[in-house]
Image 1 (cartoon, helix red, strand yellow):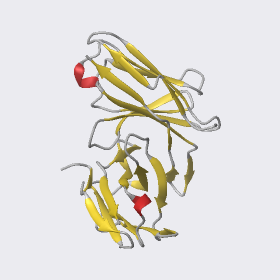
Image 2 (cartoon, rainbow over the protein chains, first blue to last red):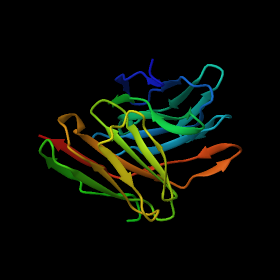
Image 3 (cartoon, chains in turn cyan, red):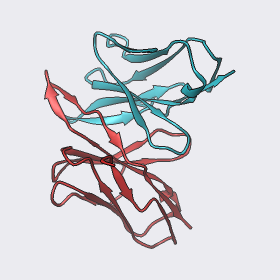
Image 4 (cartoon, chains in turn cyan, red):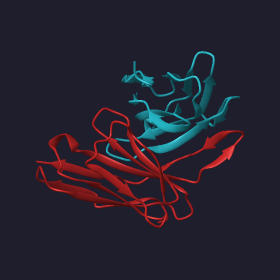
Length: 112
Length: 119
């Protein structure tokens, strides 16, 4: 089992739709969780950190469920420009330190 | 532009040659990370530095790979005796990491990457 798992998709949705991605992690001692966005042939860009209480930034909402060991990203009112790969990152506990560990990413395609 | 920069952007080399990549982080950032990314996969952690100290190195990392950050500013990643399997995008990221309630806040900012092709 991979340490950080994401459904690779693609998720194919119409403009205006609401779409949600999950990301599961293996180590309950993990801390610090993030979502990044990566466009084709570009570097990842930070989308948002994920806080224990959940957080919202415009159309984007991120949540953490420690009991079930997953984080989620909800995108409301999808835009064409949201088409990208969404990567989750978990700081996995490893021998006294924490290693930032990426999932393989979930591909989102928003169509007209 | 005060973002993370990487040089070169592309490198083509023959199997068995050594290559070196450079990363210049955002100036006030204390941590610097190296990752490798192949098609369809997320970035794979290689190593990271806190200032000039190399704190973690992936157990999967071959001893052909070495990284330095001699003055706590820029970093270099060297791959010796390259193999075709080393072909990938090599990404560098930096963060201003501080601890909040036993949790590291390490929002990372990535450079554009160096694409390595080993023939």
